[in-house]
Structure formats: structure tokens, C-alpha cells
Image (cartoon, rainbow, N blue to C red; front, side):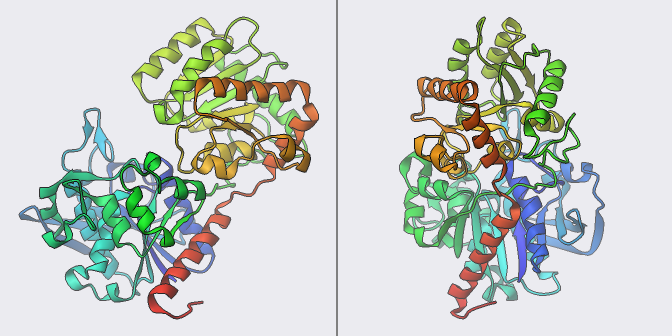
Length: 497
């Protein structure tokens, strides 16, 4: 197949979250399976700072938008390995900014115009390909206009008659909602601004647009695909998704085991695998404790937390529960890496100053430190209120770090709770909270620590089972390939192989 992937983020060019990991790894896996894959994204300032080779093409694009004509250069690069070409829409007035979507004051005021331009310019970029696409795979609200353009044969691009569109939801909470007059930017008629299409309670909703018009919809775990069809997690679009449930699938994001593997990880003091994980963890734990100023007591398990400091990630529960686990004689130590809401910065800083031998906090992001925490920790805490997929629990499994999670979204799909039956069957890989509250989190942590201290044979089996899990991109790419083929088959009524 000839596959085009539209995104605003892709490692190593630009990243704010998991979208970048997906769109940096999935195209390469699809290319290795014999498909021709092209990634199209904006040429953000981050892209030029990423150190990748970028070259001009012979093509420019021109879009009439907001009462003016806006031009852009079409640049090209490649994902690592050179199998996948990356086309970059270079329009500095839209994309030469310090951040991708907003600043300290909030979202950029012209985001609708910026990403409407990207979608319309991307149509012209697809025209320049050597052969027409079989699949256009869109990601998140910033690309939500593309399925609408293709369904409405906007500007009559000849390849539109035969292409299948896929829309992937990475997080329902981000929908691209704008005032109704922004309809004038996209070139589609007001007949599309209706409750069954692009309108959402009087506003233009670009994620809804993609969900309504795409031929197939995916999201990043099977459990999340079920959750977003309910009011609690659907963020107002649960009815749209229930209406389209027959074309909705969940596919867990993969892990790049060339980067996340304790046997080869360049950031670690000691490499290890499933046969020598105890010695490897002991060495990495001791080194991290020394680096972070924690007491180096081999009898005390270390708990790691990495990620955004926000309510969604369960930090309201963590900070409420943590006070009971930091006093003299506490059975655990903590190491935290992340940045986010100021109140959590303040709370964690205060706790770290009071309990400096029990809690180490790094407020910021460090890829090096993230790898070291995964390797050194005995347990990894992810009590997210909701989690479309999650990646850190997958890293933890490979690193022999037992996840303690709230079983929502991808956390439910990828972590098997250690109960009497799963321990007997040797299928347990972690611990599930029973309810989303601080008491349940504390009880689950106590259950994990008790198992660690009093049932070392069970603990060793949980670790070993987790380390043997395969959550590679190869598995995920196989499922995407199936979705592409099924969608093409459904559209054209003939098997494609």
C-alpha cells in the first residue's frame, strides 16, 4: 500500500507527547512490512532544531485563507533509517514559534487558521507524490478536516476518489473547538455545519469532523475505545462514537525496544536481562540513589513516577496518600520526574525538603533520568484518572519494574492484576487499584509492598512475566495494516492483498 500519515508531531522532529512516538515509529514499522509510507507535518521551529537533514523540494503550495493567499515551501526529510520520507509544510508565520500549540497564556489565538492551512496545504503536498495514496491516516484534531475534505471531494484532487481515510484519537480531551465563524477558513459550505457533521453546540469541532467523515476510527487501546463511547470519558462526543462503533477499533501503542531495553540501554550503569535482573536492578538502584541523594538501603523498595504533574495522572491521589508513606520508618522510597501544575511543584518540593532521604524530585524532563528511573525502581506508580494508552507501564514491564495502576484505558489492557488466580496461572504483571481514590491507592501500594517483602517467589514471577511481554511496534503495525486493508476492502468491495 501507499500510505500517507498526517500528524503535527513525530520523533525526532517535534514532540509534546505520545503522538510523536506513534508517528515516529509506526511509519517505519509499516515500511519494513513492504509499504510505501510518507509522513506530512508542519515545519515547526522544533523541526529545524532537531538536527535532521532537511532539503527543499521543487514544489510550493498556495492556499486562499482568511481573505488572503498564503504560500508555503514544501521541504523534505526522512525518519531515521531513510525508509520513510517526511514532507514538511514550511510557513514561518504559522509555525515558527517557540511552542507547537500555545504558550504560557494558553492556546494560540489562530490555531484554527494554522491547522486549517496545514490540512489544505497537505492536500497539495499529496498531489506531488509519485503515486496516489491508498490510505490517508490522520491523527488528532489538527488533521480532522482531511476526512471531510476527502469525503466532499474538496478542490477535486484526483486521488480522492479511491483513498481510504483513518482517524486516530490519541486523547479525547483535546478536540479543537472554535467559534462558528472559523468555518469561513476551511472552504467547506455552511451545509456542513450541522449537528450530524461539524457543529458541536454552536461551535466548530475539528475532532468531531474527523470522526464523522473518516472511513475508519482507531484509538490507542481497546479499553479506551470502549470508555470513550460512555459519557464519563467521551467528552461530549460519546454519542458520535456510539453511532460509529462498527468502524471503531483500539490498538495499543508500541514500544521501540531498540531504545527501551535494559540489556542495551546507554543510560544505565548496569545492563541486565531476564536472567540477571536482580543484580542489574541492585546496581542501577544504588547508582540512582547516590545521584538523587537518597539513602542507599537495599532493604527498602524504590517507587518511580514519571510524567505530567496533573490531575489526569492521579497526582491529587498521590500527594494525598504520600504523606502517610514518608515518615520515619516508611517502608518505601520515592523518585519523581515530571513537570506540570504549579501546585504539585510546590507540594512535591516541600515534601522533598522535609523527607530528603525518602523522596527525590526532579521538576523538569530528562530522557536520561527517565531511563535510569525505570531501571532502578522496583515499582512504578500510574494511578491515572484516565489513560488512553500509556507508555511508561510498558517500559516498566520490560525493565522488571512492577506497575501499580488504576485499570483504565491502556493501563487495563496491558497490566494484569496480581490476584489469587493470576498468581496461580503465572500471568500477573502488576497491581490494580479497586477504586479511584487515595485510600484504594494506599491499599494497592500496601498489597504490592507486602508481596515484595513477604512473597519473594511470587514477586520474582510477576517481574519475569512482565519482562517477557511483547508490546513492540511490530505487533501494533500488524493491527494497523489489518485496519487499512479492511477499510479499503469495505470501500471498494474487493479483497486487497
